[in-house]
Length: 116
Image (cartoon, rainbow, N blue to C red; front, side, top):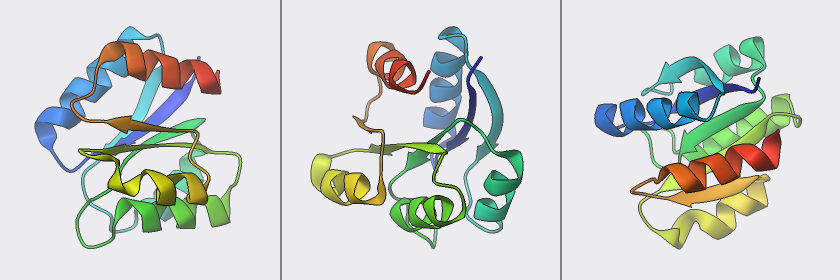
C-alpha cells in the first residue's frame, strides 16, 4: 500500500484529497497546511509520495519540493495548482505528476498509479 503525505493550504481541498487518496487504497500518513518544520518531518516519515500544493504559506510548494528532493530523491512529488503556470517549474523539480484543481478522483488515481 502506498504511503502518502498531503500538503494543502485549503482545509476543504485537503479533506477532499485525503478522501480520494484513501478511496484509491493508499494510506495518508500525514496532512499539513503550514510549511514550518515540514521538510524535516517528511524526510523522517519517508512516504512513497507527497501531494504538494504549489502555493502554500510563506514558503511556496515548489521550494518545499526542492528541499524534499535534496533530502531524498526517492520520494515522488505530485504538485497541485489552480492553473498550469507552475507546471514547468514543478517538472524541473522532479515532479511525478502535476494536477490541476479542482481535483477529480480519476486524475488522483492515475497519479497514484504512476507511483505504485
